[in-house]
Length: 83
Image (cartoon, rainbow, N blue to C red; front, side, top):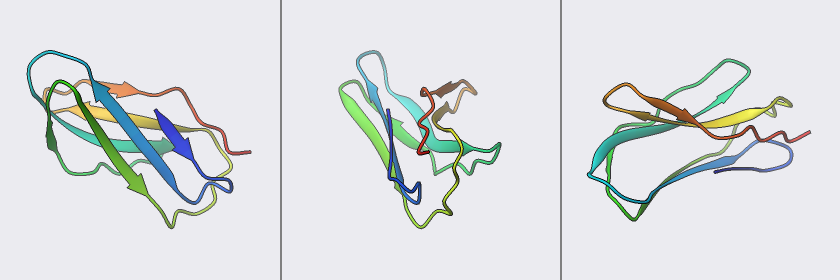
């Protein structure tokens, strides 16, 4: 899930792990082809991994939340559009 302020100067990305063994993941967001990953963290079943970003430039373009695993898989939320 991704939540974005309007104007889009802050956002919150959340992923929930419903089951299975622990994984190592990191979060990010993608806006206008630019992203910067947060650090890796362990994620366990029943856990919500969340990261907030603030002080962003107001980008009036779709923004996706991203989750990347240490194994190389990347998952993406549906786009949030602040405009």
